[in-house]
Image 1 (cartoon, helix red, strand yellow):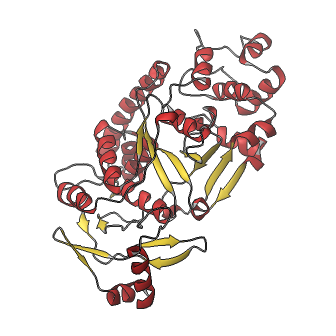
Image 2 (cartoon, rainbow, N blue to C red; image 1 turned 90 degrees about the vertical axis):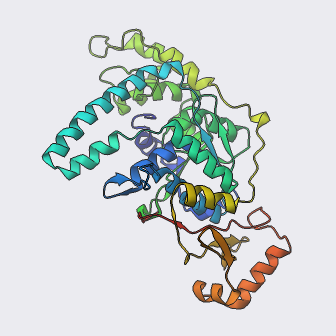
Image 3 (cartoon, rainbow, N blue to C red; image 1 turned 90 degrees about the horizontal axis):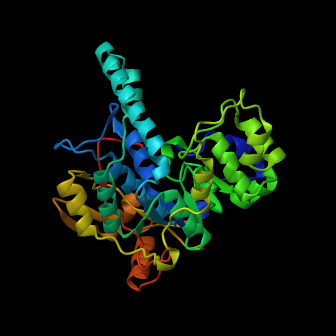
Length: 398
């Protein structure tokens, strides 16, 4: 769920803390990505005829399609992604999880009614409300990332909290997530829309936490109290207090304790047994990965393993006409990468002449690039550029 209305509140009260960026501006950056949020996005967005992608065995494959192509896009842009997976949910989140279960049950009823009435728009809407990231989705994405040579971390608890810890320790530049509670956990830089579909053409939003605090005129702890008032995953909120009133009260009184002393409890009743102190402590001192033990490494992709997993096991088709590109050096000139085609699980290197013709560039540029790779020059901080294997499914638009 994140924090209700926080992005708009920041846009209204700390606009200079938000920058719009293009993906190319993160060349060479290491970025921690909220894996569960990404997988959820893929299950929602990567669809055919309103349904998640499935192979002939009825297995869902939307998450793998999304993870594969979004990760390739980042690597081609010179980004070094590290995915962080959720661990066990904190005890304080049990109430929110129970509410989600109730909402799913209601969505199931509404979906059945829409199907009976043949209302396709409502069928699509309620089907998406039933989407849930499972352990199998997570494990399959971990396997895919390993085969792609991309590191991942299993957080002990909330992924956003461990992402924030990695940023604060200097291991990575930013946290990439759609949930704004990454800021509540103290990440210094938060990115939204980094993993959004290219078709949506959304600029990446870059939030700077220190500037937010400065422009709002609050401390980190006061910002946490503000987020609790707005609505978070760990406790309820005071009735009748919206975003504008919440920030005014925090600036005036400084803490939830003082606010409770100065508002009319009849007009603005707090939840019974309100656990705001516990929620505050969780944001201030969350259970996170020990950053001292984290050694991030990006390895060469296991091409044979990728073919076996994605094509033989998960039944993706081969796309023999695709050409992969990589950004070379600071000038961001695009140069064709040595192309690999796949035919019945066997790889075949196309001649430089064919590669040049398909890519629309000179044969000499292809030859120079391949020779540079042979000499072991580093591209994007790696000995070899990632050679994207052409894997396709019926869905388009990634």
